[in-house]
Length: 591
Image (cartoon, rainbow, N blue to C red; front, side, top):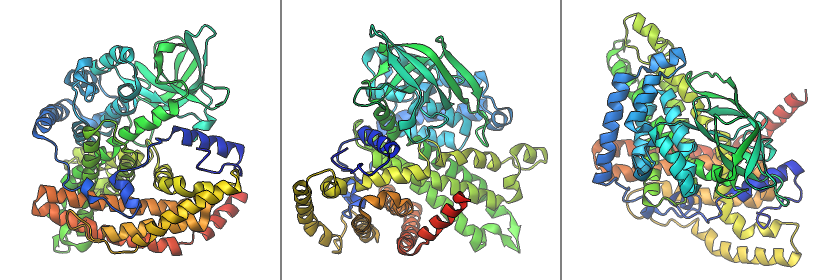
């Protein structure tokens, strides 16, 4: 890290936070399709032809999803779960009997052993049905014990805990603290190794621990200071019935009324050394790596939500008449319907493509693809829920129970609207995702030239780096202006917009240097451009693979709409009143 970014002029807090984040990053050089978009040389061969799920895997997924759909339709009442704030025990038991707590856990540990694609397809089904059940199963499998143990656990841990999880033992994840959100350098929860080296003593308090009230075991992140790394963190498996583990309170929210989320306190909890996951001091890296795959559940759920929204608004738009014709024929409503369908298709395409990468290689570097899918898909989900409520009007604002009581179709628009709002915050807020993706997109440039601006290095070393970077960019930069045709299909304006993105990213680095990290609105727009191009690209590739007219029409609309959005974002980069807005905010804070 110290060889890439100059931290000499940062405050101690800034330096500690950055050093932790950099030390925990995946150190591999980016090489996927998303990275090529930011580099201005989109490698369409990576997405064309679009990966198609093989028949055997598809059949396995279909069989499980059919059972899950039947269970959800006949044994669960999402409105009652929302109303009462509880998931009935018989529902939890039924999910366990289905194997829903071990979807991706290998069969050798008692799980179903299904693929990432089938897990994502299940999340789509859940996302359109009940946000509380989606959160329960997602938090358990995506960030609870199964995912970190599959990636970093030893065989003894897998045998002991994965078998429990697969049988229905609920797990949770504990990272956030009262004063620690996305800045783990300030973490206070600490684990101290005993003198005889047999156990750690864990003390601290964790906030917003989803599933914590129902969990039998939790992945807990805690500081384990090392002489050269006082902020080092480690990951531990902590069983909730151990002495010193206390549920302080349950948290309640705008939506997800049955979310078993709470504050959990650890007081001198003795954690055996064999419950350390991975290496000591690598906890944050484990958390971030786990989140790469875990984040995919959120856009998957949003894809299901968007399809459910379409199911509710299309009949209404055909049947509801205003001013002599169905409201769906009015341009203002028709535009919302088109966007709903387009966002459902694009979000599903993002999820299926990235899931296919995981299935092809479980060690695949998907950090950029997963983050972009999460960013774009959750924002699309929120827009879609808002549009659905607007189309349904007062009936969208009214609860399903009230509609049912009046004898009208009890469409749960109001419930889904409340429940989906968290998705742009869960597992990395939109603002944090902008910064995370920007850091990854900038990484190739930082590797080549950041040392030239590092005041800690000798002038000779800085000049050598600058010379090498200059030689590289002498060849790289002109190619970002030349109109090079794209292969593998008609991707329209995407290649030229990708080259413009790469140029703008380069120009921004040249203009602001190390201060670019403070230009968060600029970075956010650049990331949004990359996300839009990614969504456009995979939608076109998937439509070509499907081959039907509806898919081609949707992909064409997604591309034309995306081009307009991207050009508007480029225009904002040079014309938005960011500095004026910052001055206004500064005065407000000073008052």
